[in-house]
Every structure is written in structure tokens, then in C-alpha cells.
Image (cartoon, rainbow, N blue to C red; front, side, top):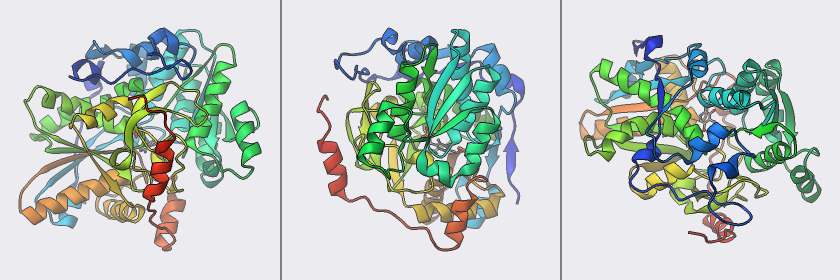
Length: 453
Ligand SMILES: *Cc1c(COP(=O)(O)O)cnc(C)c1O
């Protein structure tokens, strides 16, 4: 293994996040109140999120938003993260392409999610909030928010999708170790949960249901807010530390990416690695390609529609203008739990509409093949989610080889897979399958959406 790292120092941690909305020609359409269908103002989001996050959510004027000192101090635990030239993978693929990855797996919880968990918990604390709620799928977001909540002295309740609660016991214990309460969703503790359990007693849960439960608890508990780990604009904003650091590191490497790749659940790590580079496309200085890699079993960007939809199952959240498969879409139980979400954030959705990014969908077996190659070439075991970005990067590198042209590829390694070894076990035993989504199922869910666009 002969990879090369590009390292920054503490002083190079960005002092401001990049707010892409300020520089977009076509801004995303507004969030709508789920009941009245009226555009929402920041104040309308206060019952749900901290005031600071509510303002960031709708801020379409300030391109740079200062990172509070307390947040930067906590970022110093693991940031700046390394940028790595993947010589080992290049050699294994025998490609003329130069492959770089930004390693977000070095955070204490093993993924990029902490970049947003810290500011969200910080703002709640600043505003006198005492309790927060959230949902988690595979447990990455829940683990990150548990750590951040404990640091700022907040009590956290996490609704964890039932199937993951049982399949990924170690992420549950991580959250509990940090002192969070973890509840398998659907649960009997909320109206939304009770309704689903009564209608479908064996339902194994989904992110949409868990969000409904967390939102309901936040709305009915004094001094309690809700925090979301993806999809929302303020989450994408916080993640831009990834791309801002990567930009400096690519400069150290003396190169600039021709293509930037991120795996795609709700869009936050993709936004984080992409937006700081995309701003040079807006001005015409650069013509970088941006590729979002999503699972074939949950293909919102490639096969969904741009429409207003709810972020959750019960319809409690604001309506978001998004590429969606419909909030009732129930994705197959693939191992990349963090990518099993029905919709894409509104900024990324608008940028896709405007032609600034491409999306590819990738089957589960291809992602595990890519993950295994990467582990053997670079020594790191990637999260099943991140393996979608690796598979897309390998496709780009193979294309470069076919064309006999060099190309600079940058992808985000959003997390490590050391707590996902059960999934690797199944792959090794030959027990994993691909999933095709029938068009009829997508059509059925989409046809139930109210046409507000
Ligand atoms: C949550 C998660 C994702 C997907 O979420 P995005 O908001 O799309 O980034 C990807 N990778 C890892 C490791 C995750 O934990």
C-alpha cells in the first residue's frame, strides 16, 4: 500500500460554512406548511428546530456563515480530516486516472454526521433547550447526535428504525454509551407509532416513521427540539467543511478534480464534498462534473419526480420541494441503511433540475465488490453507504482506462464499515442480493402525491 496523505493543520479548519443558496441562480422553492400549504418563514420552523438552524434553513443571501468558536473547538477533535491519493486503488485498477478521497471516517463516531450534530446541539444549548429528539436508520446519525448532545448537556431521545435496532445492536450500544435513550420505532410512545403498530403489527419501521415519532415527541414536550441528520438545507451547510478542506488539499496535491463523487441518502455528505467546488462552476471558471451515487433500490434522483413531499410518513414535517419516490415508498432492506430515504434535499434537487449534477444508481453487489477492492487496496473498510461512492469512482476510473485518458477523481469516504461487518459476512457467504424496484411501485407512490409544483 502506497497511498499519499495531504494533511492540513488545526488553523486550516474553515472559519465559515459555505452557503450555496446565496449563489444559486434559481433558488429552491420554499418549504410549505403541511396544513395550510403556505410558504414557511424561519419563525414557522422555531417549534421544530433551533432558531439559528431555522434561519440557516432559509438563508439565501449570505454565502458565508461563521462557524461558532465552540463548534470549531469540537471539530478539532478529529478535523482537519486527511485527503488521500489512492495509489493502491489506481494500481489495482491499472487506470491512468488519479483517484483521491476525503476521509471522513476518522471522526470519533466513524462518519461525517458529526459535522452537523455538533452545531445543531450547540445552537439548542445556546437557546436554552434542554431536550432533543431525533431518528436514526443504521445508527450513524443517532451516534453522532448522542455524542454532541452529551457534550452540550442535552438529554437526547433517539427513535431507531426497528429492523436496525435488532440488526445493528452495536450502534444502539454506542448511543447508549454516550447516554442517549434509544427507542425502537415504530413504538407505542407516540400517536404516529401506535397507529402504525395497530394497522400493521409486524412493521419493521422506516426512516419516515421514525421521523414522525421524533417530531411528535418534540412538538409535545416543553423545551424540546428536533434535529435531523440529512435532507435539510442547514445540514448541507454544516457539511461544507468537507469540501472546503478538500479544496485546499487538492491545491497541495497540485491538481483539481474533473469529477467529484458522493454517495447519496438525503444529500448531506454529497453536498459537503460538492458545493465548495461547484461554486467555481457557477462563475464559469470550472466545468467540474458532480456525481451522486444512490442505491438502485432507492433511486430518488434517477427515477423519482421533482415534487412537493413530506419528509416523514405521517406528514408532520414541512413539505419540501424534492426529488422523491413518495413518502410512502418502502425501500428494500439493503445494508446501506443511511441511503434508504425516499427524498433528496431541496438544494440538491434544484441543482439537479438545473443540470449541475448527475446521478447514478448502483446495485448492492457492485457496492460490496467495490468495498472489498478498496479495503484490499487502501486498508480501510468502508461503510456500505460510502461504498456507493467508491463504486462510482471505480466506474469513472475504468472509463478513463478505456478512453486512455487521465482524469482526476475525488470522492468522499463518508464513513467506515467496522460496525457493519455482519453485512460483509453476508457478502462473503454469498447471501446478498440485488434489488430491482418495479416501475409500477414507484408510479403508485408518486401518483398519491398532491401536485403542488
Ligand atoms: C447517513 C450516511 C450517509 C447518507 O446520508 P447523506 O445525508 O446523504 O450524506 C452516507 N454515508 C454514511 C457513512 C452515513 O452515515
